[in-house]
Length: 293
Image (tube, helix red, strand yellow):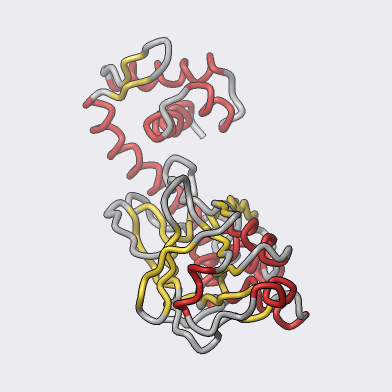
């Protein structure tokens, strides 16, 4: 690949993540090399692309204009390599996927089928409960929960993921089984929430504020707290079905209606989805554990 193309890829990453050190770490290059590549792009196009201070890079209007052309050119090159390269009939290469924890653990257990079908694939799973920035974190695909109001993303509906109220048998033995959703505020409810925002559960069409002695912004921590007997938790069905079958958890208010979570796969709208990511998207759709659209 020519020096200019490498320099343009570096320029695009600096626009997406304006930090020399972070881009240098990503590209396995020195800080000096990244700065030299940026100088090369500025010299080639005769424009100042960033204002540089001791702490940050600030893109200029010229950088914003060049970014559109650079992305289009690099995407076209990637597409041509996929179409005419030796793996055009067997997609391969690195695919970075942003997963939520519960769904990520579910899919990871099934990735063997995908890699057996496409042995040239490499999969990098970024698994968190908070939403990663698809562009900044260089994700080819990411999962989103609920409505996606971002015009910079292409959205693919995966389906609706059922949820269940569950608790450990020992907790229910000591505190009693709720007879209706009206009883929940009087119970220890394990809140999946961030900061000081009250946790709200919508059950049977009515929203209720719930709380207890334990809360977390990690669904896996909520799951383990429920198994430890700390209270009642609201979790995706795929995460607790095995625990219910083994007797570690018991369904609470199984006749109540709890709205499922709408799950979407997204990718940046400014670049075409390459074949290697397309087969992963198809795999996510085919193996979705809830109700498909």
